[in-house]
Length: 224
Image 1 (spheres, helix red, strand yellow):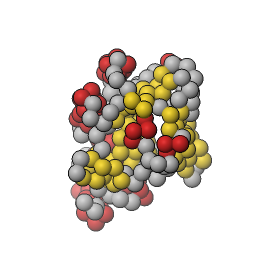
Image 2 (cartoon, rainbow, N blue to C red; image 1 turned 180 degrees about the horizontal axis):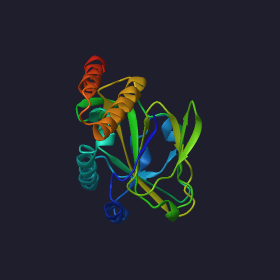
Image 3 (tube, one colour; image 1 turned 60 degrees about the vertical axis):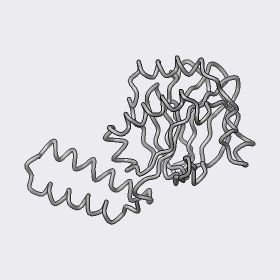
Image 4 (spheres, rainbow, N blue to C red; image 1 turned 135 degrees about the vertical axis):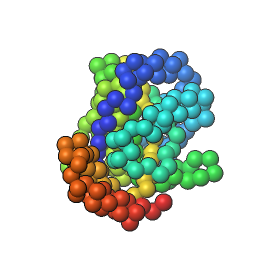
């Protein structure tokens, strides 16, 4: 399931993120690339332990912890602290698949879902599209500042060369309580339907039974 989540950051906060990131100390993005990805990854990023990365990442996670759509779609169990990257001057990231496990301190996080939080206005740079390949073909994304794309970490994806301006983004991975992408999609659809019914017919007696179905599926399908 590919899902665009608009407005994770307000436009003004996304602008504040850009302002502080533009003056940050950037390093070679290959610092966190796998041995195959190093051949196709040409960008910059903040160190994982950089104080600014921790500060901005904590803010993102605080917002997502209260974001109904994100929680419903991802059913997060663990989240890798957000990282931040920059593409400019022709930098790009060729076709790759994200690693299945990410270390976080002494722990390991299974990467069921990938997330990219766009920070730069799309008109401020040329190129930089996030291309996702799946059964539906190739889809291109270049979102507004503060909008986030949630997509399966199993997807082949790439970032096209940035030939003008700079593309700033946050990115991270999620281990879901529900490992199966198909089951997550069913639960997301069911949850959306229940919320709509709760608004339209809040006193309908069948809502309790349907909510029970949702939560019983959660109990059956969660593996953490």
